[in-house]
Amino acid sequence: MNQNKKFLRQSGIVLESLPSTNFKVKLDDGNEIFAHLAGRLRINRIKILPGDRVTVEISQYDQKRGRIVYRGR
Image (cartoon, rainbow, N blue to C red; front, side, top):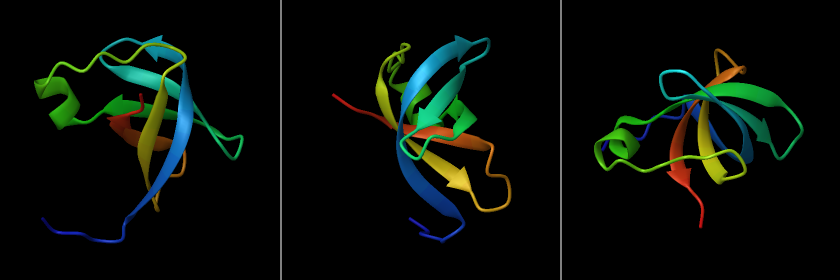
C-alpha cells in the first residue's frame, strides 16, 4: 500500500452522528472536526456511536475534515 505523508493520524471521541455516515469528532488536542467513515469500515459494517473512541486521518490541506479509519475498543 502506498504510504504517503499527506495525512496526520489523531485520536478522538465521537460527539455527534450526522447524516450519511458523517460524524463530529473532538480530538485529543481539543479541536473539533467533521469526519466521514472510511470505505473499509463501511464494507465491514462497523457501527460508530457517539462516545466511541476513534482514530482519524486528517489531511494536511484541510485541518477541519478527516476520515475515521479505526474504532477503538
